[in-house]
Length: 263
Image 1 (cartoon, rainbow, N blue to C red):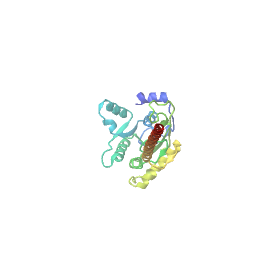
Image 2 (cartoon, one colour):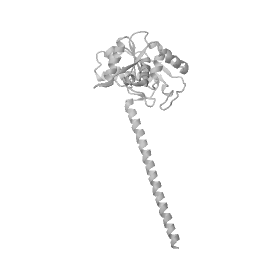
Image 3 (cartoon, helix red, strand yellow):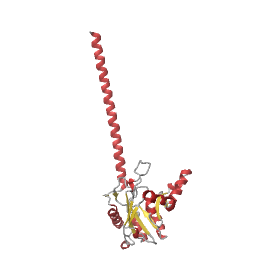
Image 4 (spheres, helix red, strand yellow):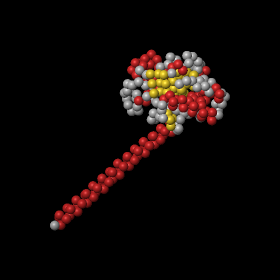
């Protein structure tokens, strides 16, 4: 991936990076990043000498057909790890298990605490179940990462990417050993997650929103649906009004014709 994809990305987009000295040369560490674009998982590994393993839904690796095989090969090449989201506990437990396996091998594990891409470029509340539990269970340091301007390269609905320089800021490792063995305390999990999100906010300069990105996406989708329904209702009302006007005009024409014929 670093040669076939990373090389052209560096040449075409010339991404800049600050704080590479905070990435350990060896040993386990967690890279906790904001999530602005699909391309985040390409630019970050491209700029690091070490391999970074992210998680992706298992469907990307099991879809049949030529397109499915190509998709699976692509995600494997960029270091994505398939996670089965089925079962009672779903993606959360699967992500934790996968993350711990990566860290036990002494590798870098990448995770997006927001759980999904930001719908509007702002930084949203981190989900405590994955990041904090992996950090406390593994004892690995958490390195905050801020992706800069990656959402501007290819906004939703735009086919061709815009050639511009995205950036990456890497912060100092955070040590949460003081909470060791407390990975099942929800208050500790919240505190750890909020501390990481605060560091990401300082690095990225994003506006922070104290709600989950998934909830924000639902609100945006609901608002878009409501706007569409309102527009549809307005068009229907306008059409009905136009129809009434036509009926009125017809009545007036008929009345005029009667008056003419009577005279």
